[in-house]
Each structure stands twice: as structure tokens, then as C-alpha cells.
Amino acid sequence: MASRRQFISSIPAAFAGASILSACASAPDPEGYEAVAADTWRTGPLAGVEGVALTRELVHCATLAPSSHNTQCWTFSVEDKAIMIRPDPARRCPAVDPDDHHQFVTLGCAAENLVQAALAHGLMAAPRFDAANDLVRVTLTPTAAESSPMFQAIPSRQCTRGDYDGQSLGVDELKLLERAGTSNGVRLLLLTDRPAMERVLEYVVQGNTAQLADPAFISELKSWIRFNGTDAVRTRDGLFGVSAGNPAIPTWLGDIAFGWFFTAKGENDKIARQVRNSAGIAVFVGAAADKAHWVEVGRAYERFALQATVLGIRNAFLNQPVEVAAVRSPFAAALGLTGLRPDLVVRFGRGPTLPRSLRRPVEAVMV
Image (cartoon, rainbow, N blue to C red; front, side, top):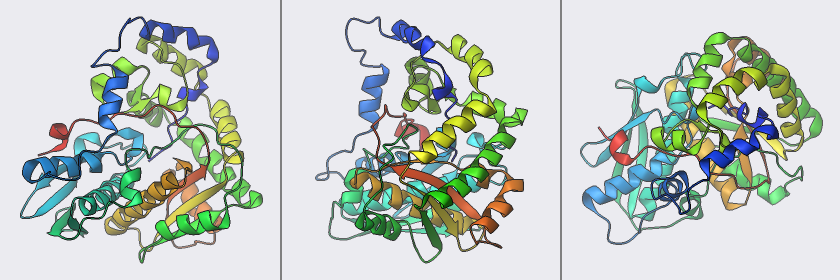
């Protein structure tokens, strides 16, 4: 689940005028970006929903989870009082995620959203990874309904790829984040002292530099960038440039600008600035490097992200040092994790709300 990537925030303000091209309509477009985003990032009623409508609502909430490049690499099906979450091989990212690590983390994120939504609708959800079939089976049984703060945070959670205010968090806030992001199979390292954050930054820059020297990575990343609202609505996936605080620009101009401005130096400078204006860095570490634990890492991260949202705290991925195999082991050793695989690297802090990424409709992910 890369940050991703802030090429989009490398486009100079000189292109801001291009956004005028997308603002000519005299009235809001019911099928435009703003309307689709509002419909995407909502939750339905908690009472009177049952049967197929309830299943659709639970799946909708699950799809509001994050995914690498916003690929939404999942499918959902219903079987015997359970919802199955499977990886979608058509949405793999082999350059950034050759062993499907991020894909199974993503399934865990979706499963955790489903857990929170099910409880709000009077169902106890119990996710279990089925290794024989490479899926997450979420069984559902009736229970007393509870609309938790984490459930209520689902439509507000976002990966905020902008600058934060540089202010520290309180001890109690850090404890809540640590509790949310830790489980029996997942360890969470919270790094808030500046020397430790600078050490992490060194490995993020190493990983980022390696990725930007890889033509396959660049081609894959570019294929998921949506330079304007029209493209974002057309696909309802990918990395929407405006979500990183940049102007909407025509696709043809974005294609040209990508080659001009997406450089290792520019990206590394931006990453350094954003690490230094963050309150801290969270590193999620599974107890084993297998798909079951990757799913658990995804669930732990999503709880962390939802708890952060409840507290008004933003977060964004800095996964370069876990995505590049040659950097991953030295990075683990620098953290005192020799023999373990760090799974996710996340910066966090307080910052502004940015425009939302989109999601495909439920019917597109149900099989």
C-alpha cells in the first residue's frame, strides 16, 4: 500500500490554471466527482436493513478500506451466513507487490471495516483466513448492535498524503493508537523521537530511489494515476491527484508532466519534509511472514487508522523500505527486528482533510 505517491503533489502550481478546464459547468453535475465522492463516502441507516440490502451495506463499508494504489484488489461473495473476501488477480501490482503481500494486507483492512459495520448492524463478525482457498471467511452471527466510534469513523478515514502540522501527540493519544494497532499476531512500533524518525527516513529514501529507477514500477504507478475528476469517476479507482492537494489537469497534460516532474530528488525532498512535519511513524510487524499474518496486519492497521480518525489524526503510508527487498532486511535490522519482516510503515499527525478517493460500486466487487 504505497503512499502514492506524491508525484501528483510534484506538479508545480504553474499548472493550477488547468483546473479551470474542469470547472466550466454552471451547476453541480450529479455524475461528477463531488456527487460520486459524497455517495461513496457515506454509510446507510442502521435500522430496518436486512437481507440483500444488509449484505450490500456491509460490503460497501468494507470497500471504504484502503488498498495499494487504490486498486481495490478484492471481491466479495456470500456463502452460508458468511461473507468471503478474495483477492482479485486482475488488480495485482506485480512491480510494487510481487509476492501479493499488500494484496492480503488489503483484504485484512476490508475485513476489519466489515467487522465494525457488522456490529453496528447487530451482527458479530469473525474473520478467519482460509489458507486452502486463499480467502478471508467472515462468519456472521446475531448479537446486540453497537455503533462504535470506529464504525462511525469509517466514512471519514482517509490516507492523507499532504503535510501535517509538526505537533506532537499526547501520551494518551499514543496509547490509544498503540492499543488499536496491536494484536496477538501483530506488533506495533511507535516512533516519535526525531533521531528514530530520521533513521526510518534514510531507508524510505533508499527504497524510493530504487523504485524510481525501475521502469516497471514507474509504468505500473502511472497506470493507476487519475489526473482529474473525470478520469477518477470513469474508473472509480486509482490515485486521484487532487487528493494529494494538487490541481486537476487534463490527462494529456498529466502524461507529459509525469515525465517532467516525477524525479527521485523531488520525491525524496518531499518525503523528507513530510516525515519531519509528522508527529511520528508507526511500523507494523507480523509475527510471521505469511498470508494469514498479512491479513492480521491489515486488520491491525485499519483499527489504528480508524482510531486515529476518531482522534482527528491523519496518516499516510511510507512503504518503500518494505516494498524493496534489498532494503527490507537492513531496515528490519535497524529497527531491532532481525529475522522479522516489517509489513507497513505509516507516518501520522494532524493535518487537513483532502478530497476523497473513489470506490467502485458494490455490484462491481460482488461475485
